[in-house]
Length: 276
Length: 358
View 1 (tube, rainbow over the protein chains, first blue to last red):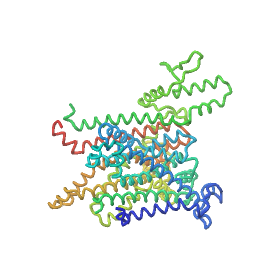
View 2 (cartoon, one colour):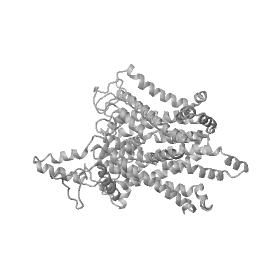
View 3 (cartoon, one colour):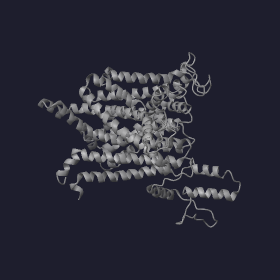
């Protein structure tokens, strides 16, 4: 199965793009001085050999800002993705396996939160917390508002496993719900859950960028969305300072694109019907 | 009784479900902003009474604000109910919620804090037509074109698919705000082909004259394109994989063996793939509207998105919650319409209609 993935050109493209951004985020601070505090020049200085991407409206080195922003965005993405995947998987697997009334209630609740725009819930929650909006808290909030997609997807898969013989056998052998879900249903869904996690991570990164664009970003860190928000608020667009917003947009897009490509490629490999 | 009218039963069932969703949305809308420690009413009372040093006058100002925002109990005539010491009695959270529910249903969303004493419903009344004329046609049009292109790509394959698919994938991965910023920068500021911000010429007053409409349509182009491209990309990808699945099914293979015309097979396939895409639209509407709101903010389009942004910057909580409630309700209504459409189109629901009780 994994050999099939490595032969898939789309997967290789997505995975290498994502790995590059991940490596930059992890190791760039070792090779260069990431400084998001000191002013190194005038506002919106164009790119030069010393500062590859110029400076922002405060005169801070853009490369440093971008690396710091990339680190926060990935941090938010992974944390929000993990939370959303865990919540969604628990609700989906449990509802799909149990069926009946519990399933109905969980499905109604899932659809309900699917219909209410998650951006709206994000706005309401973030605007009520005036001071304490840390990066991790924002990630948690995003995770708690975007789990609905994974719940739906996982529920459908888990419901189809319920009637399998090995699950019935486990039930006859006296396993409880917890045991059956953990040992006989979840292992079959692992590749599926991993795909869900990848999508949720992309959603997390995009949601953080959106919410920061509105000025509801984290107070304690630089994020890609916050860089964009500051650039727009400080007239980078009319000043023609493309280096203040284009690189941040490219980074967000590349990460989201890479994750989407990985997801579609995996879908193609795991679902043979699509492979032709 | 309703067994013989499955479409009607479907609609009534969905209506009930959406009513419950509405109630949950209102509850969320009321309680979430009150979870945090920020208290906007205290802030404006402090700001309003800063001018006077007189304690009695200050108390009066505070009381009038508390009355305005329904934080103290009133009797039937709208007079403040006082306890034995003459102090007003604070309303509990549960009572506030009930009065909020009743007022919301009447269409009264409270008073703006930033633009006091302007009503939130007035602000929304100005913004809503802009949002509706921008988002409704754009999403419907983008959905249609995206589905057509997706089906074509799946059926033709070859070069058409190889060009369209990566482009659509890119379009759906680019965040809404990036498309917006890029269009503003390239076509609005660099090339100056279209106005970069706003919904109409600043020198005009909104009216229904020909001049104003032509100005507004000129300003419409960039935000339209920005939302259209994103919706199109996502839909094309969904439809493409749906049609590839349909191509592999037995009925298509059988039809091909029978030698039925290609266009006819394509039509059957399209019809079958359409239904899940329509259901998908209902589920994705919330996310689409969210993205479109951000696009409005980037273009400073005078719709709800801009109203929310201004309100967030000024901590205007009543406008924020008013707008969020309205956006949610609009999304719910749109969803409900799609659901009814599905009920009318779905052969499984329609077929039961002639079949009597089943």
